Image 1 (cartoon, rainbow, N blue to C red):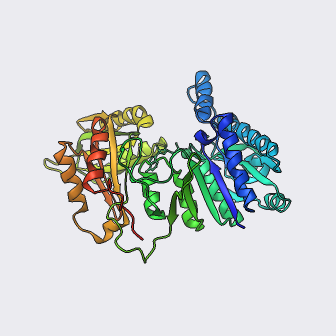
Image 2: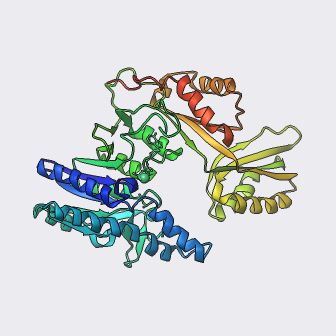
Length: 411
Ligand code: ADP
Ligand code: ASP
Ligand code: MG
């Protein structure tokens, strides 16, 4: 008998029929004698619908009120699931994040979990109840409702599993595991039996929206056994593991991630003197705009070009700031492009293999795709390309690194 925390995403609870199917699944686990804490998302599309309502009133609604609004989606699904469980003769109780006492900081719309009270949940479990918790939400020290950022129910699931020392945190979604790349883009993508926390963290940070980044960080930090599975079909899913020394012959590349949410800005003809980077990026960070890649060209004529990428939503704001900075610095001009995408190859095997980046560049060259920016770390290589070539690039790389084959993971 084990304690599982199971998180079901939006499509898994998208209709009453899907909620009934989740209830059947939960009943099967209960019949096998397991204790269950179930974390739910809102019905698919609901959070976007709520955000749409807010934006119809105000361009930038007050973050506190946004949290009061968007946290309602999860309250609907937890109640409905409890009803479906009761119908099946199971005892169940639903709780909002605040009721559990998932305590967070006060950073509305992107709050971080600070503490979780487990006594109430333990009492329910001992009384034979299924505990059903609204994902994505918590409460700050003053009792305000907070939310954890898009995709935040994953983090609720992992955090509850850590706090309860659950035997496994199972993330049920609409695909049957973590794939070599988004199976919606590459048909030949293959499911991985295992992936390391480190790789999963890179994949999530570089754009694979299968798991929220923070949930992977949390799982790594508290060593929560984490598995991604389908709520639609049975199967082993993908286990996110601590790096396994015994794993012989790891593939060099485990996966390919991509992100369409980026935009690129260049200040051309910047005087090549100390302090320029700080004078360009200072006002950007003070405007709360996050910068991702940064490239500065070698100066030829005592001036240089300074390029960086930001989230596409921040493009217009960043461009306006740069025009002012450009004038102050006496730089030539600012050019921007918001039709770019970032493609990254990820794998711990890169540490022990040379020539990985070259192979990536060769594959892009063969498809006649121009690389606009490059950045590397120990286990990833990322490139910025024109957005229109994204699918072509990902498919080309997927076959260049032989990820189409079924033998991507060996134990
Ligand atoms: P949920 O609503 O269950 O949280 P998400 O839409 O957040 O589900 O995440 C599941 C989706 O993630 C899949 O439908 C898939 O298109 C996408 N995805 C992106 N990258 C990958 C990957 N490497 N492996 C599997 N799915 C991926
Ligand atoms: N409902 C929230 C969202 O759509 C949280 C989640 O599904 O994880 O982002
Ligand atoms: Mg999700």
